[in-house]
Length: 84
Image (cartoon, rainbow, N blue to C red):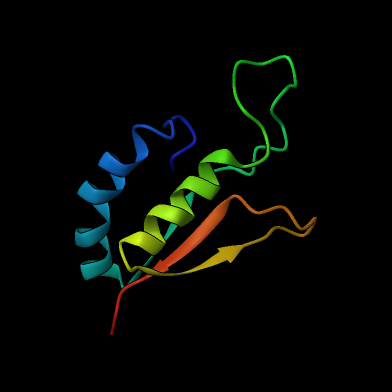
């Protein structure tokens, strides 16, 4: 769960955690949140900024993944799969 990570800190977390977890489990859900609850007057940026950054990071590091959506069509979770 990356909810309390920032765009600057999440790469350190994913680089440390993903390889081992994928090796043991084959796939991992990375929860970013979709940003749709962020108050407009908040210091946080809305609109799934973290999710977008994570997807860019996964792509640049050649991970295989799929975006998840809830019943309302919001994203906020990414299924990362190990290369088989």
